[in-house]
Image (cartoon, rainbow, N blue to C red; front, side, top):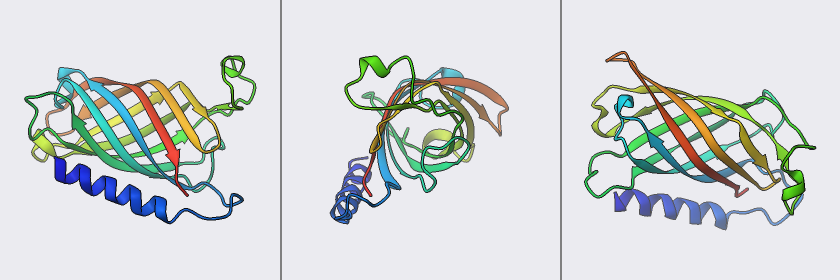
Length: 178
C-alpha cells in the first residue's frame, strides 16, 4: 500500500513540474482526493476509503460534456490489508448555475455544477467480481482551478453475485494541475 501511495505522489510531483508557464492555458488535467464510505452490501470493505484519482476534463464544466477519472481507494482501517480497490469513472455535469444558493457564503466566484457519474471498481478482495457504480453529486462547486464536491450518493451493483449496495462520498477535492 505504501508503494502505491509513493508511486502516486511521485506521479503528482512530476505532473506539477510540467505546469504551463502561461496562465492563459486551459485547465484540463488534475488530481482529486476524496473520502468514501460503503455499506456492507457493496462487496467492498464497509469502512471509510481515502481516494486518490487522476482526471482529465477536456471539455470544461459545461453541461453534458464528460470527464474521465481513474485512481485507487485505500481503506483507512487497521485490519484492512488487501482491500485496495481501483476505480474508473466517467462524470457528466448536468447543470451549470453561476447564481446559486451558496454564492453568498463563498469568498471566490463559483459555479454550482451538480452531476452524475458511472464507473467500475475492481481489485482487492473482489477477486474478479467487478462492481459497477452510479453516482449523484448534488453539491459540486467549480472555482475555475478546483472543484469541491460534498455528499455524493453512490449506488453499486456486483455483476457476478447480482447484489446491490450503496456508498456515500463525504467530500471530494479536485485540483487542476495543467
